[in-house]
Image (cartoon, rainbow over all chains, first blue to last red):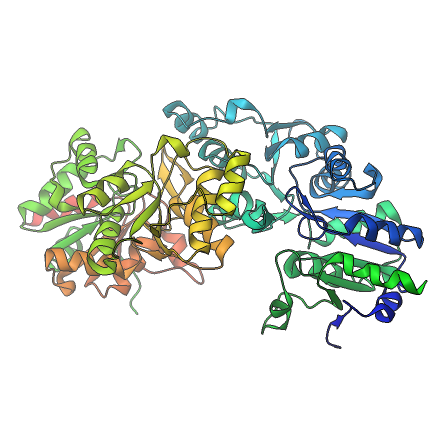
Length: 309
Length: 309
């Protein structure tokens, strides 16, 4: 395999790179922004690609927002977009549950560990759910809970799926509920299994670390992830956008999610940016999670190709 | 290796078993009781052993209680005991920090994820700590927290150790703090790494699943565990009680903690009881975590040996 090609400061190589693709899939956190900080030149870079007739799709593992909520963030940061360009792991999960699993009553409810984004996407697909942002579960566990969870009297017999995502209100009570549902045979899904995510120029606990990983440790079972690098998400994207994988490039900052996602999806290319989790030394290291085909310092470095139009 | 010997209903074998040992180390949850339910015949069995001059020591991974708090539980359930017989993972952790690590100011504070039991044992050894049951951390994460954790301004520069245990008030804010301390080089310790624990005739999320495992997933580093099966705990027990390992037997319900603890500690014997997590089919399975030397249905089956005195 050829070593990754470095594009920063090389207008000819950048033009050649852009010409090879019709569709660019972008990770968001660590690529376009970090937390609420938009990286310089991102808007102009996206504008450049669109001017050249490229399709831009935003593929995010962040499950805390629905597509409309994500669009709000784009708009607030000044990035022109629309909900049809946005593909989040909570949307991916809702589609998988409603169109692939198609559970029937009376065992078709989802117990959610996560924020409003997951709930909104489930609701948009007509999937019944409990948990999530329900204030009734945002409290300490009580003696009544211990007894009622253990003997099932406090459990909803209609729950057939546990779906875990990023939950800033994670607590013992929610984990105890989810664990019991899984012990009783519920299907185990995760919006994504990211260990951490970048925010405020640092890193914070990710969905995998606070919800799916703990439950996997308790049950000895791994969830099916509907986020990158799971190919369930790639299949959903392909189904929606009818993309030609050969002419599609995945752009991301994480080797173990973004770059692996593109490689395992047999896309025409992968581009690593060094404004997020992983850097050059990571893919050059022994046993790297994945190696990109191209890399830049930051996404806006691609603008250098525009002068050769 | 000889197959495990089944003692239930075999008075001769039981008498022979008891005669081989001077000291019995007992796990508690799943052996003596489940939650607040004392198993039948436990008091009489312990009495029988003590009458025969055996030393009984209670070795528990439950970090939520200090030794005096544990004694309260023994007393409430009607089991005669004293704090000197009780050896918990929070005590084991406090001893390790104060007598082995011996960190010096200004970098010697412990950030605790856990309940009052850990705090009491740390205090009894004179170890400074923050976190734990502090109400200031029992709340949702705020925008100020994101910023102040990321840039360290809300972190205590004197923290040199993160100690994780069972915390019924686990939340995102605590995990975010612990993760940042670990990223900044704090030593990573766990009172224990149990995936689950038995309560109310069922199972609930254990210390490993809710605190140490998530942080290990975020950091890529494993904690040093001061609970079973870590031999750091066995060394501490041996140091305190001056036991002859050859004449000591570990009694427990879990293969991956209790039985493994006894085997790796080269004790004279291990006894599995089937009133907790693991059963006969577990140690007979391919790739069992550990295989006991002896087993009974329940601890009180040992009383059948008394008639042969």
